[in-house]
Amino acid sequence: MPLPLSKRPAWAEIDLDALASNVRKIRSLIGPDVRFYAVCKNNAYGCGAAECAATMLHAGVDAFAVSDPDDAERIRDAGIHASILLYGATTPDQAEAIADLGLIVTIHDQQGLEAFEQLKRSVQVHVEVDCGYGRLGFVPEEWPAVFERLQQSRHLDVMGLYTHLVRAEDKLAIDRQVQRLDRAIADARAAGFQDLETMAASSRILLGYPELNLTAINPGRALYGMMEQPWLDGLTFDPVIRSIKSRVLQVKTLPADFEVDDVRHMADPGRLKTAVIAFGFKDGLPAQPDGGTVLVRGQRARIIAGRATEHTILDVTDIPDVVPGDEVVLVGAQGGNRITAAQAVQFYGMPMIELMARMSLSVPRIYSGGA
Ligand SMILES: *Cc1c(COP(=O)(O)O)cnc(C)c1O
Image 1 (cartoon, rainbow, N blue to C red):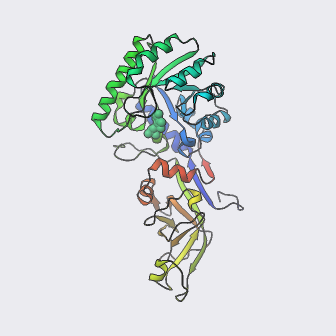
Image 2: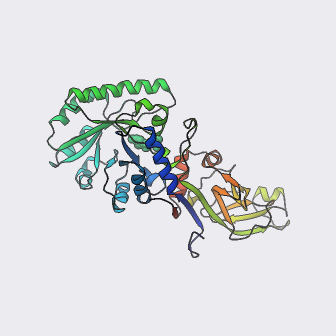
Image 3: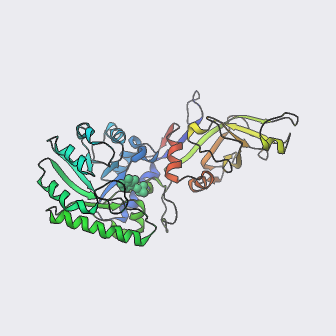
């Protein structure tokens, strides 16, 4: 019984041993001198940054990367002092408060650069260059001047430069972006930065373009077992969110002459047996009228009718002996049957890192294994 009896029965099970194993697998793919930043944005992709950080350090990561200062605080509050890189996430007026957090700060535009410079205190920074994403970062024509400016800075301690590559599935697009990245590195060298950390490897790049594991990597989804095809190619990463679960609240067969406003009841009056479960929008379950099965008593039960805030209705007509209190598995294994995260992605039509995190972050998380 993972939840206290008094709690609403909806929860996620997080497997820290799977996380450690994924970290070791990635560590084994890279050189011993490559700095391994574990991305912990979105509260470690829904797995809980505070709980995951120590396990990841033990298993071989060197540092962390986050986009939200709250995630950095979660890691610090867990008593962890390793370096944390903050991706672009704050505005120039927040520079002082951010400097107080003791992170490696991303410098991605002129205003941010000057805001940190004007603090007149030592701040570790990473420079983000835009090689074709069009999101954050300096564009190529700015690079020579930016690196010159940083070379003259008396306060900003430049650790490295990074970029986030897009369209990893398109080799030509990656080649174009990498040519620009090479220029950024050359511009930094020309300004006198000889041994900057250089980083471009999110999970897909790490696995699909091993030649781009420069002096540092920053994978996220692979750590948490959320890689989707076609990137896996013989490798497996264990799901860290091992399951998303709930319980049956009520089972009933509506009488044939009982009128309800649901077509599926009306199509089969008097026969449809339903189970209502304690899981709905509040728990991150997406609205997707057609599709979705869950496991009850080891068998697949279809989600029917509209999903509500805290409840969802299942068709359990062909599953004998379902009673209130029965465990329901939305993602995970039960009785020799399994719903994988990849199948859930098919049901709910949402990227895995979004779907799994939104459910996991909406319910209590229960941890097993780990450092
Ligand atoms: C999210 C993110 C990553 C990690 O991406 P994954 O695809 O989850 O591995 C790397 N770099 C930046 C800048 C990011 O925002």
